[in-house]
Image (cartoon, rainbow, N blue to C red):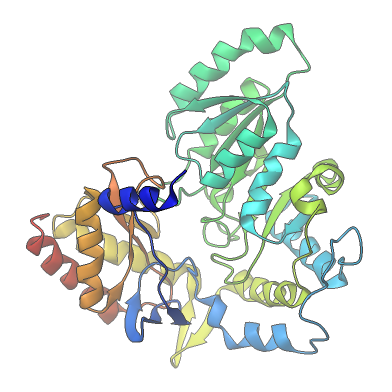
Length: 397
């Protein structure tokens, strides 16, 4: 393989990526390449990564940077166990298991199935889920995005196979809030199908957890479908503002993962100071109230209000949007135009990413906007105005 030629092709196809210098101020602002800008591509949806209470608690009484060991060797700090107990309580599940990253937690799906299993995966599932399916050796059936009829068709087609082989496990896996389309999985209907066809339901709710539902337990609670979900995968580096991933489920599932999940067994444990940060963030999440710039913010309410405000403003200006959540994809289509759009926004002091293939399908490039609870009204109005200027310059509206 000639890497230079491959890189040249990426440049020609407008698919080349480069790293930029980014220093986060808070979830609404950053210094990018030496310039302060409005930040619209952070997953720190509630702004907790810069919360002083969280930071102070995390670094208090620090005795080491890392345990420098797998949890099954010398890395099982009591803070991790406490965090898992709190996460299980948060999700109303028997047990939870913490992983060093959300990606590694998703890969653990591979441990829950074998070559005799069938996985039914939404076509827009995250790359980590796709990789887990490939690693699992299971038979993979992809159903149309958030299409309950398509899923039932696949389940029905496979029912003959599973009837003749009762030991064959069926697993449906979907995201809760889809990270690039900004829509919610129809978990109530998907859950009904899983019960009807005796399939396990696994939900990766990295982008919905700590935000939706009356207790902020995520998309399944919001959709009144918690009783249908067998295993929940989530991230602590999004709305919780911390780091790491976790899985919540039955006692048997967690014990099995401790013994069989390679991404748990063969890696160093999440550093205890990150677990401490997550514990403090969980306290704040429970009530959802912080002080910011002299104001009292109700975090989840503020996030949803901000998302609604910006969605309505962009839609009224003629942009083609997807989804219904705090993730707002502005559809562009052409990869080159999407790059130009992002570049022009940056010149106006707004930092947001052009999302292109292979993250999304070719020809469906977009600007992925993610608002947070810390954006104020003036900033969002300015964002909408700048989008309108750039959109007109590029003949998109």
